[in-house]
Image (cartoon, rainbow, N blue to C red; front, side, top):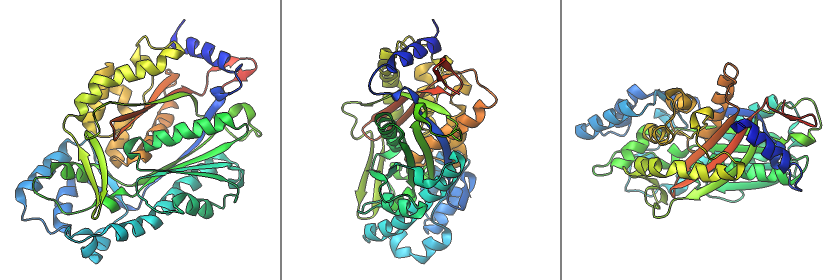
Length: 405
């Protein structure tokens, strides 16, 4: 019995249980970015010019080397050169506290960016916004209540009774955490339609001039961008209309935190915004542990026997080295992480929103290649914490009473 057949058997059995997660599906996907786009080949010159740091020639050359090796071609930013120049006390003077002002900018930017992605996903979904029963918003770019979730609900015209949940400071695995929560909500509430919106304008909270002796800041400046992703999730078994078309079925999910890695990947909100820690040991730690984590998640489904190249892999592109570590750990063929590498190239790392861009890219590519039915989605972030989810691509028939379209 191959992996798909084993999973189909597990799903058939799960239908008999009171909790029917087996037909929870991603029903639509949408993405959005700010208008300002900067090519990676130009970024080091741009960054050192706008921060008035051209005299730091050694750091500038180091930044150019980081950009050249990053695997990134371009990124999108909420800020522009004009906005930076207009607020030098905010973005360009690290001796002045700027957190409150930065958060005030993000408080408007995040719901607007999330609304741009959510408007697209609702249009693709094909049902009225008023049919959304739950809203899950994830962001690292806010610290207030009421927060971006309420403002987004107002912008979209959601019902006052929509059940809102706001996730904060989950770092790069925030999108996967939001999807896991949405899966649980949809699996526990028949007929629920969950809008997940993950939006990041993290550069607003982290942009600052280069500093000698702080290499993590250079890596972060060369890697992160802004963007938003949105999905609609619901239980296909209780679909009320013929409008909806499942894309991926969400089978099971888990989270693992690697002990003793609290400082390997970290984010700390300080008076001048985020201080981002990225240890040089992170890729090796991930390479040495990731396969065991995935195998443990798949074991209850009878799928822990390897054969990793038979799966599709929506992996959060935390950076080129992280993707290389995942590829090495699972012995993946070069093309298996092509969607993740493409998103990294075109957008950089947008924290939790990035995984939704990867899912959208895999959906696009699957229109030509439908061989792999099973997938493992992964997000890796502060902790080191690893979020994982088993996905089943639409197109697999379970039986005559439960057809995956």
